Image 1 (cartoon, helix red, strand yellow):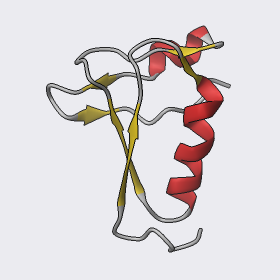
Image 2 (spheres, rainbow, N blue to C red):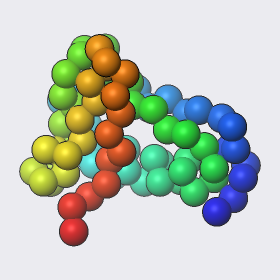
Image 3 (cartoon, one colour):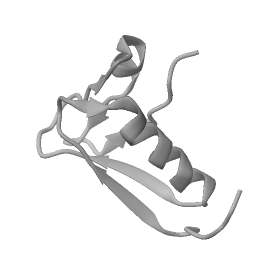
Length: 76
């Protein structure tokens, strides 16, 4: 794990619908691997769904109102 982003927070702004899974999970993993802290943001509170993988969609939830962040990881 690199420490390039150690102590940094990187925001991922996404729409509540129409987000492609790999457009979020690959950069998210890169931020984590570089020592950063990713945060998922949206203009609406509630659920954010990623296209192409229903199991992933059910796990990738950001409750903006409470500030709770779920890490987007694909189901195995």
